[in-house]
Length: 119
Image 1: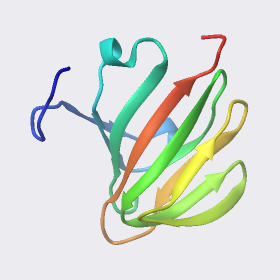
Image 2: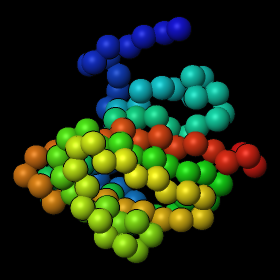
Image 3: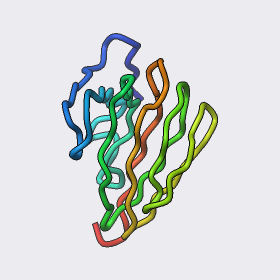
């Protein structure tokens, strides 16, 4: 088992992620070796104030968000829902979602993408 500490992992900064606005930071907690072809991503994601992750659909995979801090609006396949620390969302195969930070602070979440059986 390998361990990394805070500050050792690379943080990817994405402008206009998935057609959204502003800046999203992705800190991948596990690499391809650890994900072992079963997951596409396990990461801490930070959506800066006023930024968004554009609406997108998942095919052959699902994605779960667990919110650690901040507040925002989650687009659950066309239905807008407020989200806060402690909330958890799930987007199944064939469905879509998006996210906007509507608060004054960073919106921080854990994101997990799990591949379906066909991957």
